[in-house]
Image 1 (cartoon, helix red, strand yellow):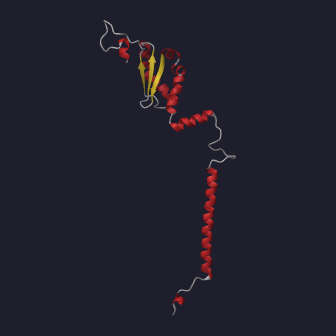
Image 2 (image 1 turned 180 degrees about the horizontal axis):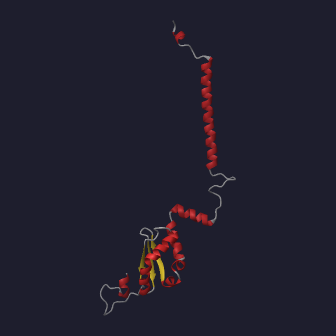
Length: 173
């Protein structure tokens, strides 16, 4: 027997099946291309009825998005507290004590008082003040309050001055 008799060529049904398989693969590929094109239109920056990143937004929303993207939320919140200091601590404390700086890494708020009596009073109230500030800013924003006493002028050298001393403000350094 000859070799062609053992392995006959593809029949009409086999050819139809392979043609159908090829047509399905081409259709699937065209469908994926159309789906990708639609997805690119949907997510791309194109003008139209739907909103995208180029649409105008209110100033507050734009600032909030900028603060979030840059990681400035806690710094901005502390800055807002420094502006609202009298409303948070009350008019009596605000008249004699003012916040001067905030260390973001250590979460320390530094407050300057105009007298030693107010500095002592604020040290006694520090725990309550930290709780109130964290309620306003979010938990853990302020861990400690560093209270500074009054800033005294540096005295010049004289007869009754110890070498290396900074004068009456030396204990508050």
